[in-house]
Length: 364
Image (cartoon, rainbow, N blue to C red):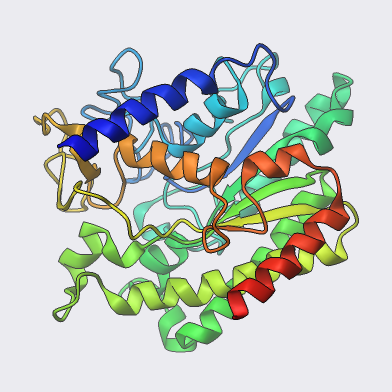
């Protein structure tokens, strides 16, 4: 219990210092991703992948469901706080013209790098479509005379997890596992991801934090569906995600070395330190698709749980993910640097030096 209380005190303190900026660290924050970042873009889509009903949002300000796949904040909300924004970044689906100046959230539940990923659940906004939406935003900003600031903004991208759990490891819906082995599939994903990240760069992005695939084989939904054969998690799924992440680190290094003024960094989303938090049960009661049953009772000690529903983490875990991304110095977690450092340097030579140092350290 004392470990949980210590974490709570730490998070409250960090929340306080995260909001003291009178001016945000960056003029704008653009968010691309899947359900871990979605703040409501799926609400009006014809899809099963939506979270605009209670008990989702029970701990969000006002206690209302917004489309976030959590009991409260997701990790990009906490990053927005740490950046000094007084309000959370709005979803593209409802963002008003006067709001897009501070950034837009394009993330969509069930979306992936590949356009077909998640299609068995219904409509979703793939990364290619998110980039097309961003181009529309850029056009509006340019007409407003604000296009000049795009290279000063922060961009976060979390993609790839659904390309495994809502594509490769669902052979009843997708052919990818019969066409590629895990190594080949990771390479196919990285080649497409490379083109997409280069397009984001061409649109003006320079400071980009790319989140790797998480411990998706440890989500309770995957454990329930696939079994673990005596392991704690579904090893085959986690091993496939690790292959992808290894290639993603190399991609980040290539982008930094080949694209002028590019400042990409990789964030490791896999966490093995859950402390005394509950990892073998969800906080809400589950539907057959492992999302929360509507309007059912939920656990009381939500700060003690890692998983909110079968796939998604609680606000407590989301805040921890964001603060790790923002402040970690461990080269196994951030490569070549954390978001705080990313925002503090315009020295590309320094970034390339950090890449080399981290590479040497990890090779020992």
